[in-house]
Length: 607
Image (cartoon, rainbow, N blue to C red; front, side, top):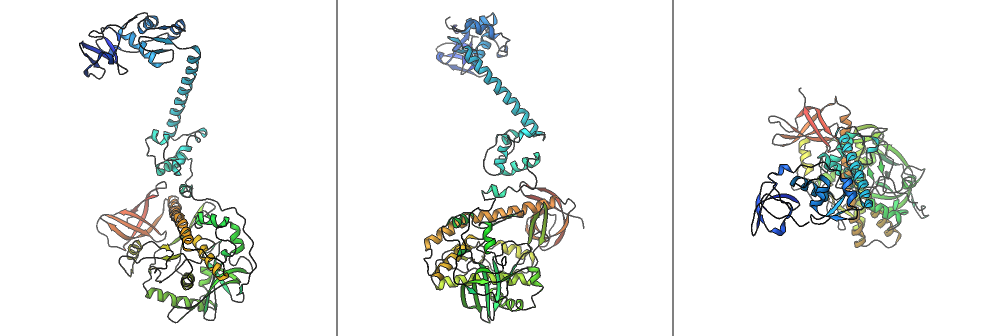
């Protein structure tokens, strides 16, 4: 059948939609469904029916028995008019449009208005099955989204929600579920949804995985401790003093006359540069300390073999240092040694500070500390806490300011300065730690001043050249007392050990590579530790709805203040009316906590 002639009121196809002819000339004037009139070339339209079509509202879908018409035309072709007559028994603008919609649907018929073919039985059967499956999937998806919206998910929904979990863990930036729910595709929004649905427990700590950090200890076999000459210092009472419950004692102190000995676990005796264990430790950078567990950079057997005080005698790399009356280092010895170590907590040691040898050791470290402060070392005493999770119980313990803790801190700094000076004197490529001074030197005396001064500190930088460390008040310094826990401390020990044995040492380029590799991961480690500590601290408060405490105002931006809660070492924003002096102590309670984005709302209680 030839194409129907174009005339006013004819139904035509224009850009896959219906249009009505208004006038015919060199160009055809038409009106489309949106009411827009325009002139088009005749070749841009196809006439479906000569009309008259007066309103697009006439073009409503018509009921039709397609199976019968399709069966009659199998293996044959026809045109739009004949197919319309066959399906609807009449050829009108309304039935012609309905027929064309059937053709465009493509299940039973395909083609153009001039040539339409019936599809094969095989293709129709296949497409019906596919459409049924698609419809079923769409209905299942719709039901699933409804359940999620209503917070009543089924066990079988957990698999689909894995996509949300991947967003929450920063493993995938996209989730169709979050999109469908109108939620932002952020890790915080995903985390919040998983908590709301009960798919994640509030105790879930996502931060190690979110930052792609290892969550288990490495499983590598340690070499045996080699036989070698060691200085026997077992006659000196040595003490590994640390927080109660510490499981990786890697430093101890003792005294021999006027020489203070700082003994450090001799990890470099068995872990050589570029060995499998060295490479694994390099990729981890340091131990990851979480309130719920510690993920070590070395196999756990390293602590069993090398931890100080875990066996009757322990191998160590010992730093013997003599200080003059001004607290300056006069003499340095560095020796592989055997030591006999007693383990004490800070509290236990603090009760013995008036006894020998603690009093003698403290006298040396106090001279050293006084010198550091004279040279501008930062003297900041802000609240600190230790957060531990034991069998699901969150325990928060304030870190007490103890004479024993100060003694150990300064003893470790003495070893670090001694290691740096030894490396400089012997031209050993090294990982030196330096810190530029803050833009304004201050002597803060109250909590707000200390809080503000700490924010001015510049980051400690590890370099191959010794530079002053402003915060410690030292001209040169290297971290050298935690080779079980920090990779660059291990590298420092490898350099010292190699030099003392007369073996090849790492060159400047090799040191730079190790510093870069370690720095690349340790930033994430510290960030994960901060986020994890805050997570458990906020959960601690969330579990205690009746919590009341005191906070100290330490900063102000307009009406927004920063309040520090000493008992928790937690700072947060709070809005207060009026002007409040810094260091004002105010009573607080918790208004709300969001674990997913780690936000807390505090309110001032009526006193």
